[in-house]
View 1 (tube, rainbow, N blue to C red):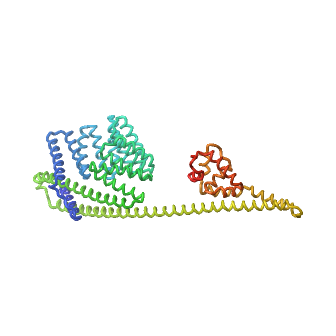
View 2: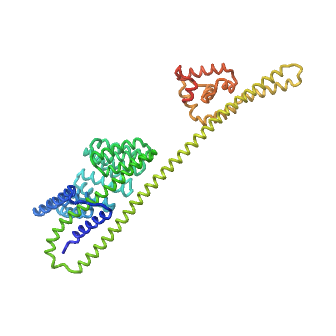
View 3: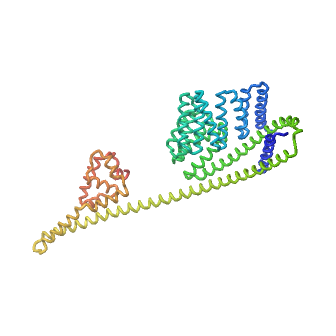
Length: 532
């Protein structure tokens, strides 16, 4: 009887071919790339058959693990788990600890890639338990790091940090720089998820110290993470710098996945600084490369399926000759029903993912428009703030002029009344003197200066503090008043009127104030005040 698994491989091959052709894609399975893939898989199969002939369970387990790695890298997770489990069954009987740990972690990784976190957690914990029993620090470090990654995916960040830190301690004991870099990056990712960007940045920097100039996928990934966290912190220039480094390195080592991620991050960063033209340019590059990567992945999986199918087909033909008398019509009907069901499920999934991709594109477009609207709103708010500041400045100048005029008028009245009071034969002499005293008293009041100071500090909140801090000697209240009036760029004549002193007195006061300040001889006192 023809094995159902092998028929399914062939059926999936046909489905992928149909899907790619429906999208106008043409895949040539005779290219050197796909022939190399065929050769790799066939060699692995031959090595497995040789191991079987040698009747070495340990060697068979290693070759099945090797096949599992191939299927995992090809994205064929079900087949990968199948090979890992067969290898694990052999190892369980042999009780080989180190390989047992590796296989448990391998199976856990596959489940983690499939978002089956509970199964992944079970296998990683089994690997950790065996590692502790055998006192294998490397196995413990790997398993705890993977457990931390699993808890991060589940959103259990405290547990994730706990396991990642344990893993980091073990890698530091082992002086494993690759492991140290990986775990530091994992911890940084957790803090990034927790919106603690400063901590995330520190751990990404630690990881980058180990990975710098290695020209590896890991170096690109940590550069992209640094660019991402700088962008989230609002440090857009640094974000663009690191993402650009990741982009250039991805081009050098021909890593399309990291290149696509770098394009996308560059698009986000330029959008945030308002350069929508560059943002759109990088977004288009990202989408084009993403589509190309998807097509290549489909083609790679198709070729792996095709190769597996061809290889399995030959094995099935041998079994078919041995079992052809056992085949019956009922099994064939069941098989047809299963195939139709699988086809229906595949078509539904393809339609679902296509809709999801379109929805993501719409969401991206909406986010772009929302971002632009927010930027426009901030620009309007900034203009309004500037307008309010200008109005307040004008009000302050007007207020100081009013104060000057008022003081001058009151001073003139006071002088006139005093003159009248000195004349003889006037009946109201005493009353005029009292009136002059009252006016003099009012002129001495500081209430209007208090209002003036409050309004001044509303517009220039730090001026008095800065002036006091830069002076080489203590400034008196009169000198602070003079400094405020100079900051308003008033002439000596107007200042004399406001302070009710002579212009000469103002010049003397300016000279004394200048001596208390660190001003270059060639620089104007007013210019110094305006720069504070």
